[in-house]
Image (cartoon, rainbow, N blue to C red; front, side, top):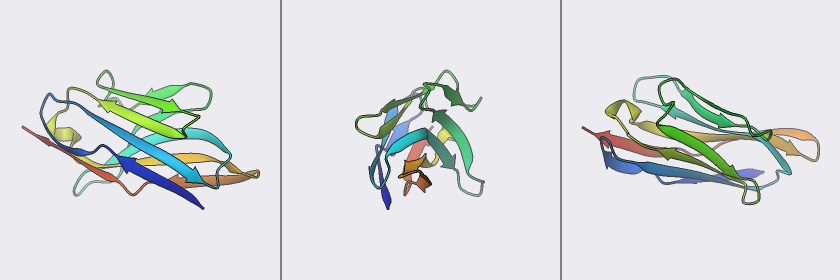
Length: 119
């Protein structure tokens, strides 16, 4: 099985910054996409950012220019640097990793980490 460990969430004032990280371990050989999603109370989970093995990144319009996704393939870790945080960024943030293990497709969600932005 694949395990994902997320960290970096917390309480921050509006305008502040946080850096989330998500590290994969276990049965995964090749990681293709590494992504972040978030779910605010009473809302559906929504896409935040993604990074592909080809080096392509994509962001939700709501976070463009404020958030930066990066990855360390050797460490099987994805990061989300969040700057200029606003109250609307308050949510549980989940990482998602997709790849393969011995040729078999693997997709795994992290356990989630709470980000709370106070105004």
